[in-house]
Amino acid sequence: MSAPGAPPALTLRASDGRALGGLLLESSAARGALCINGATGFRREFYLKFALYGAQRGYHTLVYDYRGIGSSARLPLSSEDARMSDWGRLDMPAALAALARRYPQLPLVTLGHSVGGQLIGCMPNQGLARAHVMIATSTGYWRRQRRPFRYQALVFWKLYGPLMLHLAGYVPRGVLWSGEPLPRGVFLQWRRWCLSPATFGAALDEDMSAAGFAAVRAPLLSWGFSDDPIATPAAVEALLSAYPNAPIERRWTAPAAAGVTAIGHHGFFSERHRDSLWRAALDWIDAQCA
Image 1 (cartoon, helix red, strand yellow):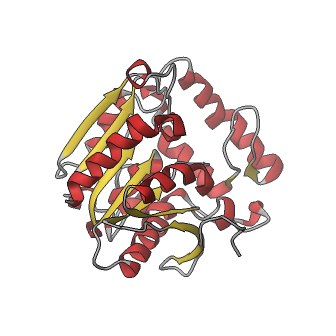
Image 2 (spheres, one colour):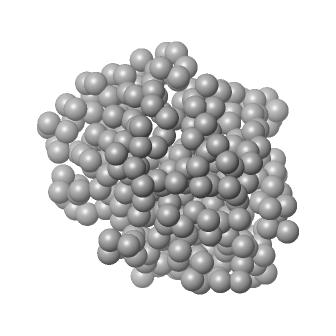
């Protein structure tokens, strides 16, 4: 049951039967529905303020946890069998389908943060969406990241993560990982992707052999930030090459242009950007749903 004042809880059901925990913020005068697909290790609550803004702007907005994360994790986490590819093949489609069933007359849009934008092409029902927004979305290949972050990432992949799997059976929060604990399968698959320069799709992972990256034809807004050590221009372009048939609008913002000293990989979702970055993102969504 939701706590007083909390958004209504919504149980999503993936095609393999897995239950996922969602929160739905409904708009009093809806013009569309927005599905927020989060980044690796970020719980749904991280996106609630942005989701509330989306609802205020006229969009029923859904936030949820992928399997293995937060409210959608099986405990103990060492027994969780989630894989990162499951998020794109099963969980993201379940969230979008839930909105389509609930609001069949409204246009749908996805907004993906990092991996939540990467895996649009894995969604068999991505065509339900009128448009997609990618925030700080790129490949994770370590050599495309900025120095010195890329070397910290390499230590995470090669030493810290494997050591934590050996000791705990999953990757907990710690010195080199500040996100939610990661199940074994999620970490190992993510590690393999980030150590490979291959293009997203079957060349990167056989789990994506049925993916339809080239089938995505809805407009994409790819928005990156100049101080992001992960989603660098080279990494963003490497990811966008997997979407050859989608009309893509590219935006790059420096922190100074947004009136702040830093944005990085996840600062877009800070409420201080309500009247700048958030407004611009919803203006773009408005134009696609008009």
